[in-house]
Structures are given as C-alpha cells and as structure tokens.
Amino acid sequence: MSRSVTADPQGARAHARAMAGTRVEAMPTVPATATAHRPAGVAPEAMLWEETLGPGGYAGKELERGARLSLTDLQGDACVSMLLFNAERPIERLNIADTAKVQWNAYLQAGRMLLSDMGRPLMSLLEDSAATHDTFCGPSQERSRPSADGPAANWSSHPAARGRLLLGVSKFGLGRRDIHPCVNWFKGVRIAADGTTVVQLGPFAPGRAVLLRAEMNVLVVLANCPHVLDRRPGYCVTPVRVSAWRGPITPPDDPRRRATPECERAFLNVDEYFRR
Amino acid sequence: MSDAVLAGLAGAILLDEMVPARAPWDHLVREGETLRIVDLEGNQSGDFLMYAAHDDSERYSAQDTIAAQANIFLRTGSILLSNEARPMAEITATTVAYHDTIGGACSCESNTLRYGHHTKAQHACVENFLTSNARYGRGKRDMVSNINWFMNVPVEVDGTLGIVDGISAPGLYVDLRMRMDVIAVISNCPQINNPCNGFNPTPLRVVIAAGGATRV
Image (cartoon, rainbow over all chains, first blue to last red; front, side, top):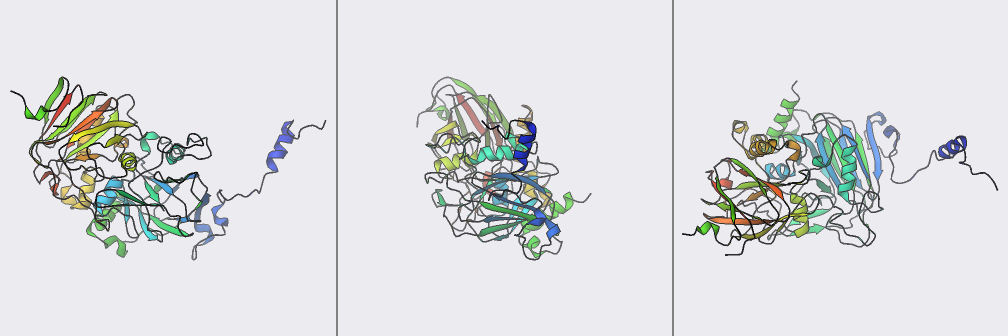
C-alpha cells in the first residue's frame, strides 16, 4: 500500500504549498494594486482593497479620509449589510436614525451623508446606480431565518447576516454591543402610507453599484447575506465586488458640502474634529 | 376612589410615579408585569430603550421589530424584539393610533446639525440615556435606535420624513407587558426645537402593575 502524501510534515507542507495560485470567485486580490478591475483614472498604487464577497461572505477594512469605496452588485442579487465606525474611536458609529432625521429623508440616494452619532459624516454617497437600499430592517438573524437546511449559523453553508457582522467586528476588537442598526445596500425597503414595509428584492440587472467617499478615517464591516424579508426558498444572494482606492479629502469648496444647511454644518463639524 | 389612570391594570400596583419634564427614568420590569406610560399633558415624547436584565448586551432592536411586523409603526399588538430577535415586550394596549421607532433620540450633536450650533448646550435625550445607563456600567456602545412614545414621524411617498405635530392627547397611554425581565429606560424628551413635545416638555406618569392589562 502506498504511503499517504501527508504522512509526514514535509509531505504535508508540499501538499499545502501545491495549492498556491488557486483562484475562486470569492477571494481578495492581494496586493490590491494588481487588480484587473481598477477604475478609470485610478493609479495602481492608489488601490487599497479589491475583494469579491460570495454568498454569506464578510470582510472589514479601515479606510482613510478621502478614500473611495465602491460596492458592485455583480449579478443582481447582492444584499450588503454595512457597519461603519470612526476608526480612530469606534465608539463613534453610524447612526441610522440621525442619518434619516437630519437629512429629512428615509431613503438613501446619491448626495446623502452617512452620519455618525456625533453629528459628523462618516461617509458620503457619491454615486448610486441601484437606488434600492434599506435602512429599516437590519441584518438577518438565525431566529429570523428559519430554514429547512438547519440553523443559519456561522458554521453553516447559509449563515444569517448578524453572525457574519459579529465575526467582522470581532476581528477589530469590537463585539456584540457594536453591531449597530445597519444599512442594507442593494435591497430596497420603502414605506407605504400605513407604515407597511414594501420590499424591493429584485433580482435586478447585473452591475449596479454604489460609490462612497470617506469623510473621516473609517472602519467598514460588510456582510453579503439574503435580506431578512426575502422569503424565497434557499439562500438567494449573489457576489459583490468591493473596491477601495485612495482619494482626495473633500475640499472646502466642494459644492456637495453646501447641498443643505444640515450638510454644511455636518462638514463644519468634521472639519472641527480634524482641527488638531 | 379609583384612579382612572390605573383602569384596566391587573395585579398589584408595584410602582406609580411621575417622571419630571426633561428627566430620565429607569426601572426593572419583570416578565409578566405591565408598564404603563401616560402622556399626562398631551404630546410629550417619551424616548424609550430596554435592556435584558440578565445580559444587557441584549437590547431593544428597532430593525428586528420593524422587519418582523413589516411595519414601521408601533401599535397595539406590536411585539418589541431584541437584537437577538427575541420578544422583550408586547404592546397590549395603547390609546394612541401609533408610536414611532425610526425617529431616534435627540442629541446635542445632532441638534447642531438640525438647528445650528446655538443648540449645543441644550439638554437632550442621549444625555438622559447616558446618565441612566452609566449607573449600570453601560455607555455609548449601548445606545441604539429607540422608541419614541407619543411621537409622530410619518414617511411620505418620496421618503421625506420629519417630526411633526403629535397625534397624542392628555391622558393617553401605552401598556407594555414584558416577555422577559428588562431594565426599561425612559428619557422624558427635553427637545424644544421641534413639535415632539409641543414645544413644551411636560411630565409623564409611569405605573408598573404585577399582571397584564385589559383594554379599557
């Protein structure tokens, strides 16, 4: 009988190293500078992050003020839950209620700020070709996604979003208390006159994208899982491309800073924060 | 002489007190007990959070609650869920058409955006929540989207929303029957820059009864 290739450490090492160069769809490009999907006008050395999250995938990264973050719904059925923190002081985090209330509107679209709980914009939404997003329903949970395939746990093939977000924040020293009410990108929830949530689940045309700009040094944690109100059988979610690159800090004369009085004061607040 | 405010509450009255205008309030409310919050003078917003008594990293979740009932308005029958998607309380009765859970809590910081930096020194709900929560070792990480009893935040077709004139009135109330032991925290909202308190913060009355409540 022939000996197993992994019967000794040298064999085991050779077996492990033989995997080098394997490519799957859901993986990061390391270094990000080597990506084939660099946006027009962005130099290779400016690329910070290039990763495709598959169904149930999650990731997190710190981005500096001025960085751009692009999320692309590659096949039309992505649902990306996003947590957002001030990287310098993660006790400051995205506040969904303030984001809606201060901007007098419940729906995210190009031009809106993602506001922290300290009266500052963490990021701005620069471009949005999807226009279907959700600030009401939050991440799916094991309890809210009963499945014939067993619990939607982190160890399963169909994890719910909250478990992925827990793993994502844990990698940065945060925990359960830091999973704040989140944004879900690419799946829409609108509100009818009687308060009913009206979901827009698609699936949509491939390639819709959102482009965000960091207005502070931020920590972003993402999870790509089916929407909590998605009742289709199975685990219906498709990959999302995450790209980030260095960019200029929003200048004082950027017209978006003066889009509304609230926007103007928010940018004054972030300017003050960085006056040090 | 019976107090009309206590009508319909079952079991012994364990607590019956006033929450002064602008002040915080918190108390343990056990599973099966009913917390009644009364809008004494009409259109006084009571910001509200709950933490599981056994582990306060489990707390009220507006998003889980909205998703489960597929509606943003809190009405009689609404189940208030935690961030573990477990029932914390049920609205067993309310004489107000609906209550809000998307409008958030006012803060000194958001006030500077909404109204201007002249408001920075005004008192705010987040200040109240931090004050109450600090006694239990909780801090800003424990601040999450809250409920606003007696507050009206409609959403228009294009998504426009705002805190508008209230739909409550003197003596209207909400009853919450707890599904688990919770620490209930109220900020009696001190906001004077929008209609949530009718531009005049007033007291609330809180009653804890040992049993459930029946509709009056």
